[in-house]
Amino acid sequence: MTGIAPYSNPRRGGFHIRPHYAVPRMCGGGGVLDAPQYTEHPKHKGTPMNYNNSEFLASYGLSRQLPDSDRPEIVFSGRSNVGKSSLINKLCNRKKLARVSATPGKTATINFYRVDTAYFVDLPGYGYAKVSNAERERWDDLINSYFEADRAVCLLVQLLDSRHAPSADDVQMLEYLHYHRIPFVAALTKGDKLKKSEMAARKEEFEKICAPYGCQGVVLTSAENGLGMDELRALLEASMTPRDRGLTDGLQRVCLFLRRVQRRG
Image (cartoon, rainbow, N blue to C red; front, side, top):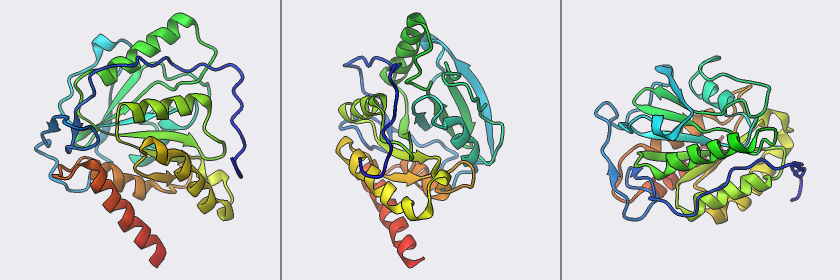
C-alpha cells in the first residue's frame, strides 16, 4: 500500500467470527434489507446530541449480562490499542469517561456509555496475542452474541490506525461487517502523527481500501487535537435520524455536504 507502513503482527490474536446469525435491527431503517426500523427515542428528535451529557453505565463480560436495547446504539470496534477509549473521550469532551490503558488487550468487556439519548458501545479490542485461548473464546462469544441479539445498532465506527495498512484482523472485521451488511464508517486514528502534506492522500488510500466492504465514510481523526470530531459527530447523528430511504442515503448526503464545506474552506 503506497505511503502506509504495513502493520506487523506476527502473532495474531483476532477473534473467530460465527458465520451466521440474526442480523441486528438497524435504527433509521438503514443498512440491512428488511430489518425492523428502530422507533426513535422520544427525546431524540433529530436535534444535535449533547455529548457533554454522558456517563459510564457498566461493563459486561458475559453475553447473558448485556442490557436491553432501549435506545439507539453506536458501536466502536478496533484492534487493541488503536485508540477507542481516547476517541470516545474526545467525542464526549471528557478525559476519563472511558479508561485509557497503555496495555494492549485491557478492554476485555463490552462497555456501555449513555451519551444523551443514545448508547455508545465499546467492544473489546481484537488482535492481541497475549491472552489465553479460554479468554479469547469468551471474547469471541461476547462480541458475536452482541451482534446476534436484537439490538438497535445505528452505526458501527471501525477504528483503523492511520499510520499503517489494515492488519489481517482489521480486514477480517471489514469482511464481517460487509457480509452481514452492518452499516459502518471508518475512523482513522492518530491523525496528529501524520504530516499535513500526507493527510489527504492517506485518507484517499483508506477510502479505496474500505469502499469494497460497504464503508459509508472515512474520517481522519485525532484524540489529541480534535481533528475530525465534528465530521464524525455529524455522521453519528445522521445515523440516528429515521429516514424513508435508509441510512446510506442519509450518510451520503452528510458526506457530500462536508466535502462542499471543505472545498469552500
